Amino acid sequence: AQSVSQHNHHVILSEAASLELGCNYSYGGTVNLFWYVQYPGQHLQLLLKYFSGDPLVKGIKGFEAEFIKSKFSFNLRKPSVQWSDTAEYFCAGKRTGGFKTIFGAGTRLFVKA
Amino acid sequence: SAVISQKPSRDICQRGTSLTIQCQVDSQVTMMFWYRQQPGQSLTLIATANQGSEATYESGFVIDKFPISRPNLTFSTLTVSNMSPEDSSIYLCSVEDALERTDTQYFGPGTRLTVL
Image 1 (cartoon, one colour):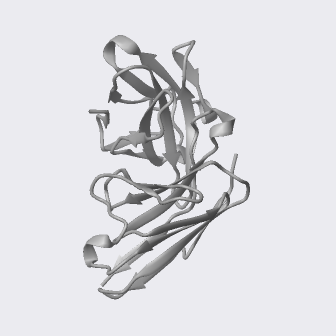
Image 2 (image 1 turned 90 degrees about the horizontal axis):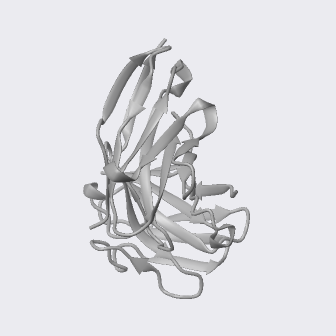
């Protein structure tokens, strides 16, 4: 069955700390992978996505994610977080050519100023 | 991209009543989805709203409980029928434009429903 799992439900970091949020997927065939973010009081929005090509993808606000096919992973990273990165982050996957996007459980990140 | 609005933004309802949530998009889109996000949990797809035909429901969701309309390419409604406290949740409308070929979904602000 298709699934997306996120390793951490809650993460607390101090400003300037490095961030890595884990995401693993279980899909047959090729898959498109996404990270969405929901800032407090705002809509869910796309942070970055991987379709093909360079496995290291860069998104908005200095975020990046690396697709590692052998590990079925798509971890999100940021070298130095800011207080404004406090948000909930969702990893998601969609089979190439499919209709349904499957979301992970989400990780709530709190960055202490 | 697409800008999505939902009405109402929140509501408090009595058990046994029904609530209709509206989703309006600022452009014509091919795919519209309704999700539920229960407290502390991820997004669960309720159904795909199809223009001109019946919605496609996910396992565990039925048309009698969550009737959906999609009269055109910019508008959809979701009704939560015969509500119980277990229906308390955030309901999200989402769209994806297949013509963009990006698989990117755009989300509305959500409707926060509390059932007493």
